[in-house]
Image (cartoon, rainbow, N blue to C red):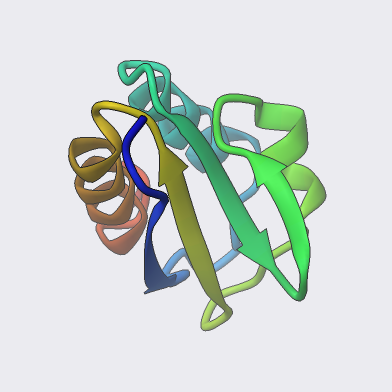
Length: 91
């Protein structure tokens, strides 16, 4: 089993991770077999669950940690970090 990898990223969406950006993030996360978690203020959310991601209640400027564990963890971290850093499909 691969080691757990992690990466910090800041939320750039003006309204945080509400339904639409959370769904876009989840769609990316689901492309990977790795177990992917978002961590904010010590609370972990399953990056493959819209309800879990929205439950973190993150706002613009908040920094979260992305953790992934599995064979494709490095690729998953890169993809999830990129979608969050780009605004999860919102302009």
